[in-house]
Image (cartoon, rainbow, N blue to C red; front, side, top):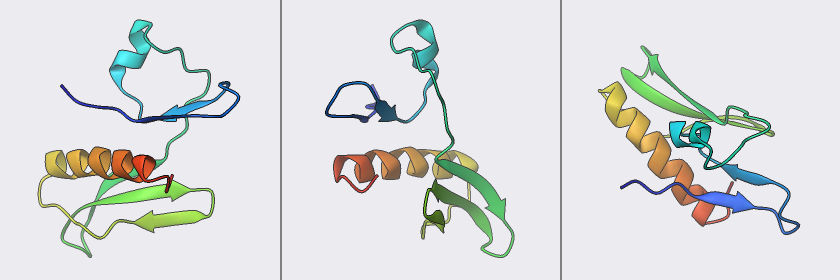
Length: 88
């Protein structure tokens, strides 16, 4: 079972977290979905890179993966960890 970390505003009106298909099954009803990251192949790095898309700009994470599947898992784990630490 995977864990998805959500950040809820103090007034309870805003919830932030990674999108997952379970959200469309009535568990949570998002009114706005914004991209916070992307995983793309970067030939200059020789692998799949995860880039965070933040209000302050784009930041490519340091770990580049040879398999896209691994990069997607890294993306989820990193964003969840950053949310737990209050960095996102």
